[in-house]
Image (cartoon, rainbow over all chains, first blue to last red; front, side, top):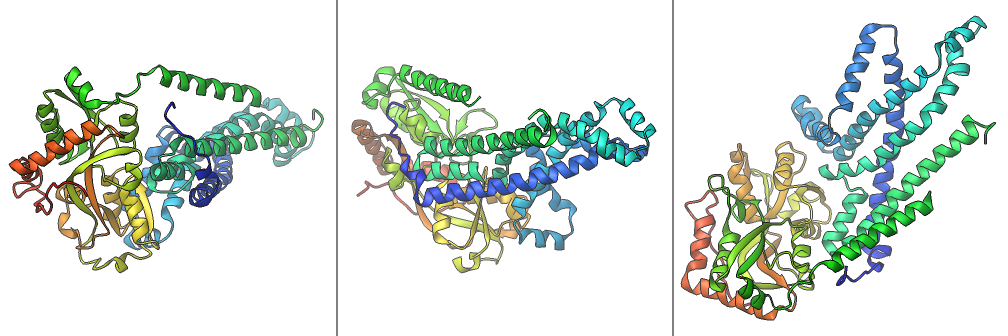
Length: 234
Length: 275
């Protein structure tokens, strides 16, 4: 610190600024696709896990345990390097000519996060006493309508806070994509550091980006929870 | 919540600043300091044969770089202490005074020379590529292709300059970049020839790959010392020039790169005083 000269100008304009912006763009893309994908797959797995057909339940459990209990970094390497041994040569050739690094990173993040989201959604639904379903059914609602009007509105409210956690984790975990050469914000910050030796400035920029993203997601979900799900309390 | 957060960030920064202030400043005259303490601390690579790596039998760090700092320590009458560093950590370690000298495959370039002082060139190589046999005849064959290398290296910066249309994929280390080449994910892996030769020597299916005669940069390696530490820099320069004269520098080269090794490199340089 004592003999360190701060120079913020290198990251606020010019080439290095452009790098950080392109990194931010990539991080946003990974996060957006990941959040939507992980939520949809998570919802599907949660429903399968509560199915009355045992093999579907087993399949969902296997999926959950496998992807929840292996490190994300290993999964990224699995999709990127490991898939090569399984896929036919023609498919590999095609993949290698596309932006496979990005696709493998998003796939790994989506699947990894979906396993956690599935459990959050399922516990949200299970937390609603089953008497409510019975009451709704005896009042003449069909199973789907009971879900739609009675169970899910309550369950989603309970699920929002843990979902926010998963979304935030996904955004931060996206930095692991740089291990396979995806040029997201952390990668670009390191790049700027190795070109300029101004690591403190570059990583401050990356930190501000992650903080802003996280706070925005948290605020958006908070707003949704208050205004849409709980309007009477808003 | 934001206020609390801001307070925490400020507290964290304050901690870092006080911790740094409490640390002793690096010595201004390393030569006198080392002679007094009788210990020379060198920052070296520990997983990059044959420059610096852990010998399987002795469990000690050995290599081309190490033999040079060994000779310097001997001349100083000091004990040599080796500290593993990475490409990213070596310069901060030096400027903060944790090590006295860097001997870690470090390319001399003007940006780095603004932060530290370099010795005369003690190893000379050039940046080349490993590719599938026959795939690359000239740089033109790599235009628009994906090229793998390692993060934080000069190789990454050089290849972007040499082939702007190429997509550079930076991996954590060279073995991973080479795996990507084997799987066809990149068309080439690029870095200094001496390092490429080491990777190729270890590869199980080396017959399928080659290092074409396409060079994109010259890479002179220098020993790194603190800026304006003139006496020490002069001493180190004098020592390595003497090693060249006595033939010791050539012996060290042949020991690690010569005909008896997997690399079979010719020594195409001599250690001379920089202009």
